[in-house]
Image 1 (cartoon, helix red, strand yellow):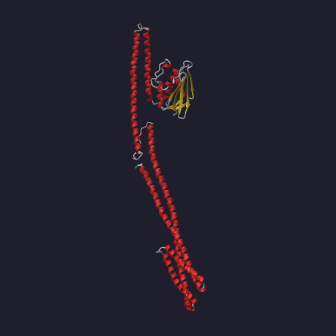
Image 2 (cartoon, one colour):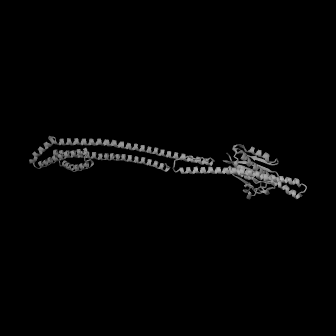
Image 3 (tube, one colour):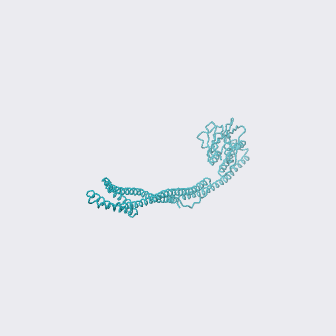
Length: 487
């Protein structure tokens, strides 16, 4: 499965959890809003119920006061309640469901109150007529006795009060249930929010850790492959995931395979070249030895017949033959530099230089050694570098008070060695040429030089991924400075 598909599925999973969380929270929020709305509505219902109950009671009290004291002020209060009670009932009807038991209770209260109003209206009318004419007094007294003495009014009051108590009790019970439901909804919302948040965090973290580990393992395997390639180990990485990183794996494997083939081809060609060098050197030395033998025969056969000039010419030939042999040997040494890979070992550089100097440096030379370290390296290669540089310094040092100075400066990753002589120096225009094979400054003195020694030194130093340079000017000696890895 492709990485982009896996990441998309991870995001899709997280989105599904978020949608589920939103859906549950929305459902619980609706319940909370419904419960809150009901409680607010119930508050108004209780308030209106109390107002209605108070209004009916006030009307009844006003009726009694008017009948007993014949005070018109009670009648005014009665008429005021007569206007407000219908409005309260109308509001209450709007707050209650049509099919609810509370609505039926309210209808019962309204019906009883309507019957009471009919009786109240008749007795008020009779009272007003009896005040105007005593002839109506008997009718009034009959109605009054029916209302008070027979407790018809008390019966209305008891029925209405009973219904109001049942109405309020039911409303309070339902309110308590809704209040508990509201608290439960809020608690559930909190719990579900925490739960889904935890699931989101765990799922997101799990997906992220899974993808990071998987990608990291893939990348680590490719990094290891790249490091192996850089170290010359052309291995392959196994990758059957067929995702975006697979193309990189294929490219690295292809590169490793190509480099392996190229290195093998190069090694084969190097071996062929070295073999060719040995064969050619052997074949070249044979004619040289033949020429030398012929020269000896000429000297023996024509010893008394050669003129001094001819003998001088013949004396030049052995020198040129020895130079030819030196060139052939130098070419072989140059070819061996890359093929020979000696193992690293603990090396005391000071001891190495002293051993070389004991063989190469004449006794009249002054040799100074400074801060030469101990390190673990290919001793044979370092010995070959110092041998060529010291030989070069001996060859070109000043004939008067010859002096060679060898020192070292330690850096973070490398040592910087310098081999300095007090010879005639080298002009700046030749500082790079002298490191090329077969290049030599013949004018420095009359001695012969193959021009291979410094080329060998540069090749060894380059193979160590280090550098070599010369610091010199004409007439001021020469200092060959090269770096060498600490490990």
